[in-house]
Length: 132
Image (cartoon, rainbow, N blue to C red; front, side):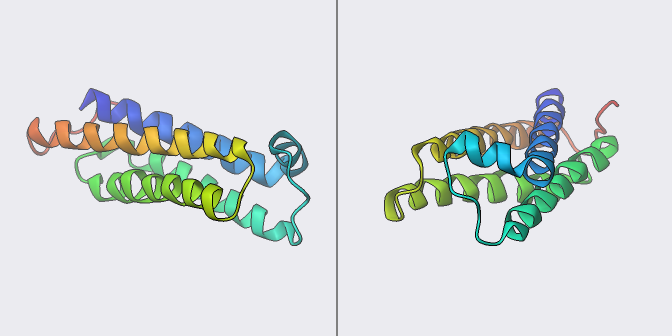
């Protein structure tokens, strides 16, 4: 359960920082990735709000990881794993900037480690709350 707790905290920090960057430093993020300004910046801001909400959700479930495994499965392996796949496909199909593959790597690693932690915690017994 300790690994799962660590993964949840890292994922929460990752998503809060990403969300904050897209909400409050969009021009800097855009320059870092070498992209043109978005046609409608609200789309990037909404992605930032979404990532921020996901990250805050990770912190909201810390008191009882066992009861909130569903959230971890959806936001970890499903969302981050799916995001990694979409970044790779976008790179191949739409020729997105190569630095976007850094998101594929970070999301993919978090999805894989989250899956391992969830499976390991599932074998460790039911009803065990994470220490906070």
